[in-house]
Length: 381
Image (cartoon, rainbow, N blue to C red; front, side):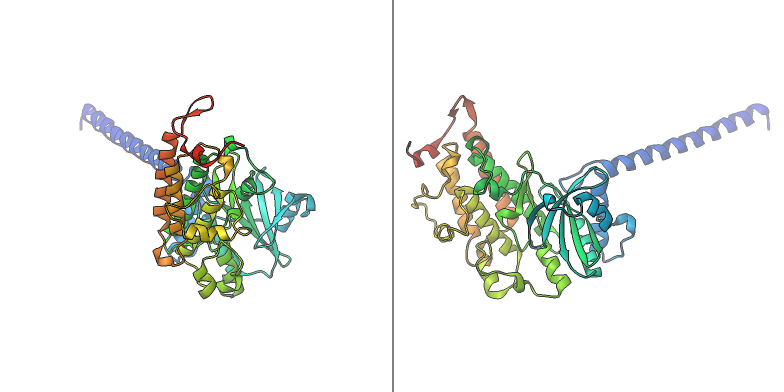
């Protein structure tokens, strides 16, 4: 073989190798990009969220989940003692179905909410936590980790700084009318419906079982996040008790059919959501005004709504939009579950009403709006 031919063949072979290496590098870059890009509300470039999605898939398939796929961090009691200053009362921020709730600062700088209760260790608890921690959505409070030590069970959630929407409606932290107009309340309702709708879209659907205004948190931008998703079911399963054991008769958010049968469903969540919408519109606590639920269930076009609508909303809404929402509330509160709409329909309907209200009540200038028919409801004081 001549030297010229050998050189040519060598050069060609080298070129093929270079092309192959380049192709491999390009492929790796594409895969890396796909794994870190955000494709929907339920995916994120945050590595912890990617881990959560992997864990969800393995659980769905009934496969064992290796440690690198677990969506929940297993924290030690020592770490949580440091985070809460030994669970000092200074960091006690409330009480809930699971027990005491503390604010904590982890060593990596993350602020968390820690729920603690006395209970013996349980593998079922770990399994349930791993599943619930795999469910991530913009409008759900994320379960980040757990701890089981010294006959204590603890759940670690992301900390939401602006409290529950109930405190802003009728609690100690009323917001001004400028920040809580009808269209803003509709935005909160829409995000909440998306969070519940995501739970119902899982296979099988996850029923919240304890949705109420107090379990809806809002961040500094008033983005709503549904809290305690699946917590009632977790407690029932690890205790071996049925759901009826936690159904309280005097809970206005509880579906009447659940009170009778003890069986929760996605439609019982829809009923609870209807009560939440009623509180959102009226600014009143349903527990103290049970008659308002009966009023909504019997809502007619001729009904006088001036006594129901929260006057803090002022006149920045249309009568048509308000009546459309009240019709939807009445539908959600139907005593018969099969006659209630599914949550995905509720979400779309609220979005339609919200978009229309945004277009008709957009501020044009100082103190003026395009349409403000809501002003017909109230007379100046």
